[in-house]
Length: 319
Image (cartoon, rainbow, N blue to C red; front, side, top):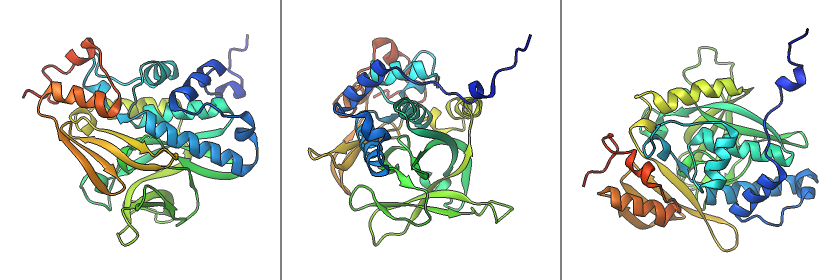
């Protein structure tokens, strides 16, 4: 008896049902999506992708609350678990959760999606901007009519706000006045300078310097790769996700433009930005204040069991 798995089955990835996708689209406020806009011309398909990304960013935050407000203090990348967490509970997730979930949504809609790994620049966390960490981030590459776009809904306040064409130094507007681009280059730590990665960079205004944020490969990462990456990122005590609460959600204007973001850094200081201006600031000195902030700014209301999960941990606010 031949027990080997057919090659086509090995390359298959899970998808969501039509009913699940309909509920997701309703949740993010995209209720008039036509399949023609997904499988139509390049421009139609790209327009739909951009709209889905923007609405997702404004609905589901980048957040690592499950590592602090839970009984298990763990992260699952199972697509059914992710669907329940996002659509069922109205929560968000950190990079691999957001991008694994969004990638499954796009694949269910008929997009050609490949998942790849990324290294976060140390400069993004106040370190040496010439150095990069381990493989700890996930992005999706979506191919439309032969053109490849980087799509990322899981990098928080400095993340990409629209699909980025894999083209060297093609500058794109982000949230005004900031801009973003990809650079195809080696990194300083490469022993083989002929190797190339795509480096995602941002600048906060046209007169500011470009800042490297992360770099990624075009080599596909498999689910078993992310199982390992997710375990390290969510459980290793050197990972800042385990000792800090981080959150970010984009803000959209009535006309459908991304105009700002709300963020929570180090679990205490929250800022609401419109463009580059901080228009509101809140500091959380107690668990009650932080839980109220989660509800007010991020639309997240935790269960009593989840709230108890932070008791006795390094991230609990004892004020």
